[in-house]
Image (cartoon, rainbow over all chains, first blue to last red; front, side):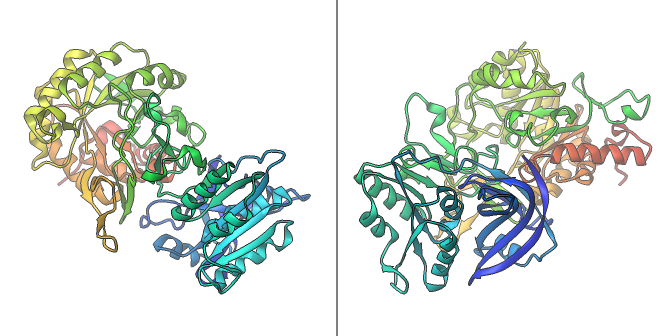
Length: 265
Length: 311
């Protein structure tokens, strides 16, 4: 593990306000759900690195989707940091720390994976879909342009169902309503997206009596479990006094949804 | 203060504080370097002057609810809430790892009452591998209606006396910048027996989310750190130097060697690198390397540089 300057191979528009960033990365090996911390510029403002989920690893020998020589990130411009990043050009380099955190756990032998992605919450699932070779992705997109990202899953054996709140693409309504229709007692749910969506997915999974793992997002300074800024409240209280908070960066970002105190998130 | 032996080029870096020799003047600031082990994959702990560990309390503390941090221009505001494993778990589970390194370990301690401070200090007394205590006095005194020990010279002095009585270890007092006159605080803690002072802890700050009309941090206010506070910190070190009889450790927004040298020239015998370690886990070692390059280039030593500011 180290922080390294990585050459930008591409940094192009994937959808309006949304970019794909390709980084030269010899012998990359990433678990779906892991993230990297990017220093978007060498200046002091913004000061902190920005966390980004890994969207893909390419260019390796063979067909292992988790190894390669290019790491691809997919990000949306939401503030100063991502705006600066989106202006960075090919052949420039950015300093990157990672891959960090724990990815999604292996599904059980008889479990059928349902991935639930809301907005940019689609990011960890492209690699996971490639790794699984099957599975079902339910993708709640903000509108037509964001829904276009579902095309990236065409090369996988994963089935994709899209929902939009306005009904412009796919089913009209919330992605968790799709989940309610698709979930069975053999499912395992992997979810990434806004907190409201994660809460709803947790409820749907609990009602069906199946496991649910969620990937959380929190402001963080270090990404390596030191600043203790990205704490979320754990459900287990009592004796494990000092375990009442979990760090999203080092103990997550993927958690068993049962371990999280959703009331306090 | 800050005398060193300087026989050859390898001896340009060491400094001495409270009778302890440090191989170079660069330490890690408490709360930004965990218990050291977290950084071992990224940096060489043996190349630091000292590791100052996360603040320790008598009992483990779970810390504050989130959001705990927010970025600010050239800085960050935090309200972690002094989450830590507690002094017992530190001695049993964290310290053995650090003993494998030649680098000095300084235990940062805090409490909510005078008795807490005494007890934590007593528990660390005589523990192998702990070179000194750094006392965080920027905590509210729960028995005195929450007044911060470190903003009242009498309370600050009482804490230092309580700690000194409970340990034979050298005591470094980490001062709060949230005072009118840092010189008063320096004198107060020195008179109480403090062997050195760290200047400064974080500046109290606040960020408002205007869309939500709510504070950005769950605790409303927090501690500001990072390069934004550096000029304030350098000024306070320079002021403190005028009255201090004990060595000063300069802290506040050091990102690179040049920043550390500002503190040293203004009067600090050593420095601590804090927020920079979040951005680059190897930052403190790079600062030490940069200082080594500077003293070599100027044909001088760190101890000669201390307080060498010409006004």
